[in-house]
Length: 175
Length: 122
Image (cartoon, rainbow over all chains, first blue to last red):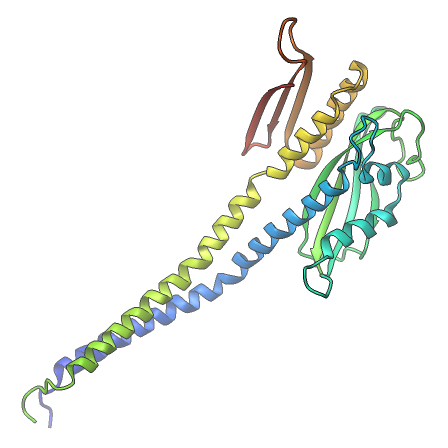
């Protein structure tokens, strides 16, 4: 037999159900956008870390006017191996015991006055790029004095023997 | 039981309070990720390191001969345009006679979103 007892309880039950459904919807939609938000945050940290490491390498350890930074020296000598070791040591060091697992791929960009174009040569890499990496790009201008000679010429076709600014571009990703 | 039983109203009230607090906690969780995302996007979009880097390189050019400086200016303009879609130009000139300073640096950076212009006396 149908009677009208307990209507308030029914309404309360419906209201509670709606509230729970809406709460569940909020939580589920929050977790679904958590992933892109999270990669932005780690991208930001990675970019800052890489820029700082490059700047450390590009800071001369002497105040003399002819003082050359490690990065200038490495670039001049085209010493990709040393670049890779130093950069990864800076980036992978943690306060804890174990090392982080960052990988790099570096290219150098310079201007060729003869062809009036910007050219590139591959400088160093610790892993081959497969295309699946989620890499960030960090760059540093390197001030090069190549008047005395052209040690890069083997690797960098057409690089001029003059004072110049070249751009070191590093792709950095966590493997 | 023909009439509504009004026992245990405290328990019902507590139930409401708990469910509402869960609701607000869900809103907090929902919003916190958006905050992290927009903040990180804002930081990534602002070319702080690019500007710092351009300044650093310009200051390194202080003692160059005029001919060398002209080449470096062209280097930076064309490489920055090529790799970063940014307009970069700078000029280092001697301060006028009688000035307290020795040199004047003018640095311009514009990547279409952020423009940075600086005149510095040294």
